[in-house]
Image 1 (cartoon, one colour):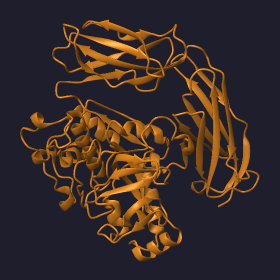
Image 2 (cartoon, one colour; image 1 turned 180 degrees about the horizontal axis):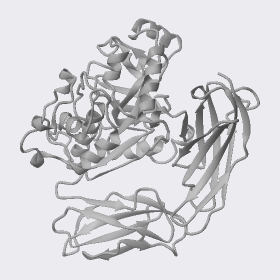
Image 3 (spheres, rainbow, N blue to C red; image 1 turned 120 degrees about the vertical axis):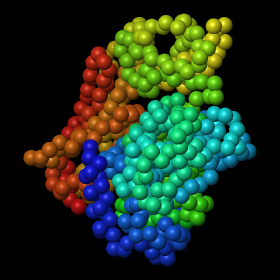
Image 4 (cartoon, helix red, strand yellow; image 1 turned 60 degrees about the vertical axis):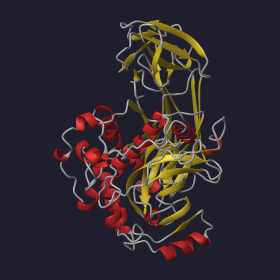
Length: 506
């Protein structure tokens, strides 16, 4: 994994290779028209910016998006099931739940704007009021949380700050960094900020460096999600349609808020923070599989109800357990006198339940359970046994028996591994386990006489894809293979594919 510093250096290399500091919209539109592209370019204040200015209005410290290997699931498998074909929080149940578009201005504060935008809509959804008057302070989140106009911030840090400390209303600390270009001081926050702060109850990661459209779509049914993406030069000139990178070098990384999706267009619907004169009134649509990586890393927020919150802090989502499992619950309901725990099967049918008082066991014995995927939620109860609130449902895997694993890979049709490879090479992976999905799959590429490159996917499906950017490595002869793992607290089973020798020549 590259460090943040090396990633920033990589951005600089791409920027210096650009022939022009600004986007030529007319030339770009001619190329888009000739290629029958799904989007058009348009002049705007953003399209007229130089490369350095574009870097300034992105500002996301995101090492993972610059990886030379990307894992994902085949798109053709993503549209099965009962998910709606389209979902848009700007028009849901006849109402617009999305906050107005804002402009981050001359500061790399995109993370704060994306986080606040996501949180505001989630507050409206939690209240059941689309017209709830809520305007939170991106300035307070950016300045007090640790953001930087010059080098940006990291979405995970923003999410943790929103959970631990929270953010006050915009009037408590109005946004100024977009004009001054400076971070400002947290001492400028209003004196009664502690009383005005709003916190999230928790957050989850629907996707973590893995292209899985279905998981993002399922998360969007509950509300917008924050995501990270790469910004290329042509994106600055986006004027409408479904964006797919066409021309220009890499500029930087950016944080935005996904508010919906459309399977007919195979695209996410996204809220940006560059003002309403850019794009489609401040929004844009982007292809599920675009190289920009929107949706590969996402953060979903859980909002407390006005009365309180029940948070299931352990087990974490998708935990693999053997023998026993930790149970950690946090409830802010003052009248809470007990809790009810329910276990569900993989089809959401209740399997088992238990009610306990204020003192409950902190571990659950699963040693006699059948291996498989389960779900769990917790309900806080008052002294009369009435329900006060319910946690989000989380999944976990029980693995009591050592599984039998199988793993194979092949280059996509049309790629001959016996000939020199160049550009981006794709592989199809097939995985099989006798009990539950593997915990991880590793891609290994070892240069003859050199180091071993290892990249890991922590989401494993029966069919997967992998893209290898051979342009990111030196030319030469490599040995490539995959390793599958099933890891729990009790064992670490692994399987390795055959190794292939390939030549990289760019």
